[in-house]
Image (cartoon, rainbow, N blue to C red; front, side):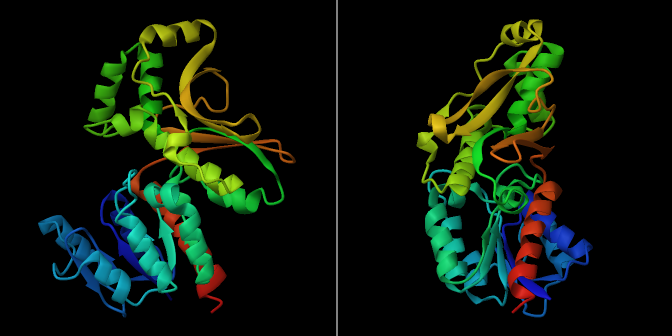
Length: 329
């Protein structure tokens, strides 16, 4: 039985806990923490009870137990780190991940901050301690991008990648094109549907897509790119007229993240695409095209967000670790 500690009980954390509880995966949660409390039991925790506590009073367990306590003291094989992303410092998640790696514990995270800001350092620390650092869930939710790059396209040279990596922007652009809505009207609708935050800056200015592009570029090509290296333009200035003009040409507009090393391009910007282009996906879907030397172009399409969808990526990483490391130990 694989033992895991779960740090973060927001939407994603609850989704992960629920799926581990529901499915017979050979995984048991022995440590858990939210921002206010924690719980530990080497024999396995009663997840249903802890989630019920979280719903009733906002705390999953003992308020005297912190996330750091769980990471440093709980009995587990892998840490699941799903706290909110901090794009500026990556903390406290970077510290959490380092603590686990130093204990020779595997780490699975959905947190973009640590992977975008400290990928090389964290990867080196994982390798030094003989454990895995997996982060499939940081880019495009349920789409198995990292797995495809690491296994499915093994032996291929990745020449370039292009993608729709933010569902909020894609929803807004889809609605503007379909109904002739203004940006403000489509954004309001996205908020009402729960696809946009009260402050949508992170999404609509292309910051979220740019962070994901940095993660991809550093993973694929071993770069040390940062958010500041991305040439970034958001969708906030797009008008219905721009989309109508594109439609007159048989095209539409999507926010595209692209990395083309041979042309020194690392960019997120609205792009005009033919309506039958593989990256013209609707609603909150994500899509990514990988341009390779042997397989040529591979396009992956799927749900880029959602608690259960993100849990799919996290659980996939956990089972990989279980098969590769824990089960063989």
